[in-house]
Image 1 (cartoon, each protein chain N blue to C red):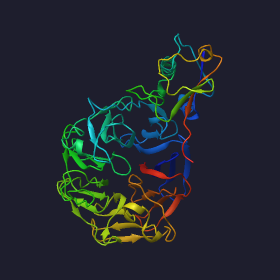
Image 2: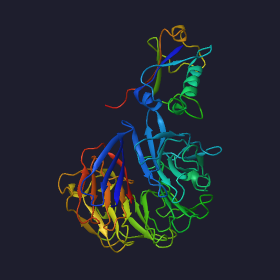
Image 3: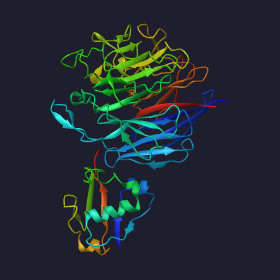
Image 4: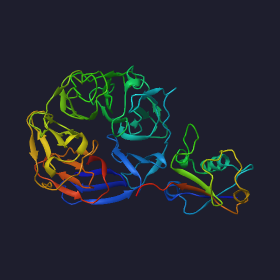
Length: 376
Length: 98
């Protein structure tokens, strides 16, 4: 029988939640790396027992951990992330030039085919990769070397590269997203990059349709339609059907928020229905909690614009948590499972594509990331 | 032998349970002690001082003999009591938060 393994990164350690395909009873292990911030954990699609974890601390910096046995044991790997050449500057919050400084790894994306190859999205925004299972890291400098680099600036959470999508149909194509620079695409395996922000409108920058400067929160893709991308931006949910060359807003009937719609952090796609997408609307960029104290996942079965709130099993009063950008995941069982974690320490799961929900755990530290592996 | 006290998180990372004893050739300085520590436990590289600049991380402090040596030159001799092993060189995670 199939199993699922949910990898949860929190402010105070990592947790691994495992269940059989029914997804009703769960075994919880952790905290792993107790007391450290676990920004992200992810398993290799090519070897599900190979896991990578970003362990970080304001005191002691960055650690990269690797497991070869599905998280039972871990080994510290190389933690040296050094920008290629002279790092140069980007914009600081006050608009002045600020040197690029490595702070932490936000996201780890293992190769689709090689367990020893993994990409790391870091703050200050850059893309690194390892081809030896994390024993060493090298920057792919063409991204920061994109001519717009000196104009990038941090969002409230820092200038982080938080999304890495590897195109399953074209191994030379990579998408990344940076807060607050925008989305970028490489068609040559990360050597050169193109900003793909046409169609984005952001009222919080002087030129609302600028080439860069947009606070993209997350991008998602279905493996069967690699040219279709879905984006959760600071405000607005958008889609592109031409690999990011042009985006259009699909906020539709998402909750009204003082005349605007579509603020949130997560977005993901159903495992078997490429036009079924999920978001968690959050009230405004200054409040960061669900509308009306009701935790609702919104699902669109039409690729956006037409949304339905999913509430069964989710708290519908006095709920003021947030759901951060890396904290939603989808399994690939026949009845698609959806998972998300909150800053209140709950991890919710749905074994019926979002129709109903139940908490797997209720009282973890604030959840930073959720990933799920579907195991044979 | 130089005795080094690590904060709990770094003891876990290094896989040690108590103080670390190090042979350090004179002159005994912050730099020579940290070099010896990182040579013994490479996993600690980057956790106490920056990989590139070798500067102390902002929230890490160095104490010895009831003094805060954090702002001393990394090449200044440590107190004789540390060099002789009578007193430990303490690496401390700064208190922060609430």
